[in-house]
Image 1 (spheres, one colour):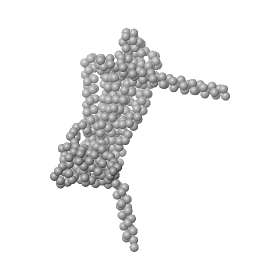
Image 2 (tube, rainbow over the protein chains, first blue to last red):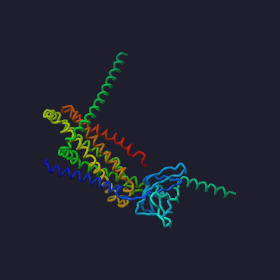
Image 3 (tube, chains in turn cyan, brown):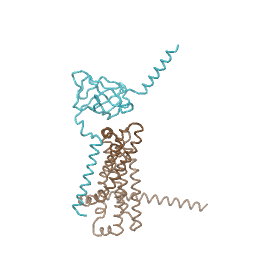
Image 4 (cartoon, rainbow over the protein chains, first blue to last red):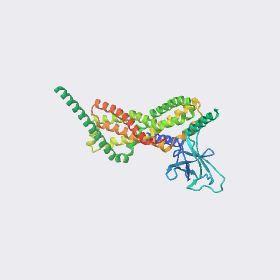
Length: 157
Length: 268
């Protein structure tokens, strides 16, 4: 095999190999290094986080604005402390409301931010005071059954 | 009674010698691995030798890797669509195809193909060199055969493997897209966006690359070792080639289990 032909083939091989890796990084996965270069941290406390995980999305008006970075349990208040990173392009008022929603009926859980009307914005490391816990499906079902049973008893003479 | 005892002793002797032989061979293989690593400086110094081996085991495996990847992707697309549409979630086809290729099928099947396409060829080449006493001749001329013959082949395989696995996965995803979007008519945007939402670069793509690198080291090492250790006869070389393919396949599958249990444990 000729030297230059060999070089050409190896170069071609490495080039399409790197091309395939780039395709996998950029088109197939959403490469984390590109988005969220600048971000600030927020903290929120919930009574119950349901199935929320680290890396779960944080959305406002349905748009992805950040991600959950860490979840831990506070033994003093018995609450879950959720830390998230929010893209620094988006600022939220100090009285923003954070709730845990489920995407679809059985989908993943995410944090939804609903901005309030305060003039001051949340700073880096601030805590979101108003939160609403995840809806636990079992609780809802048992409550419904309990109410139904109570109804049945009250209508009886 | 005495015959029974003799039979037992014979069996124990057989077991003992087998065990000692296996352990001895394993030790020999690890010392060989160290020797290859220690003498690969020359291979990188004369990088043209490695280039030739990348051409030999990488470029020549391109066709089989790409076509197999395409067909695996096509089958995944068909089967995945058939199952997912029962649950009314055919948009998740992209996710399914991409995750199964990136995490498991891409590295594993590419490594299996690589072992049978390039690994066997490397073993045959080195084994034949040994049979025709070329390795001994090199030694006589003060050319170290490990540095001149073995190390470039080893590094050529190690360098080629991640590229081949990435190409396999890419072709597979393209095949899944071809079946899902072009032929069946899953929505193009939903296919890619659901894939991007669930495929994580660090966890899925990068772990796949690491896996293929480990497989590359394992397959290349087995191939060069079996070639170097082969009995210098026609039959010995053919047995060494068989051992390369069988041992590589077992090593790939076992390593895959170990790597998967470390990489993807505790992830949802």
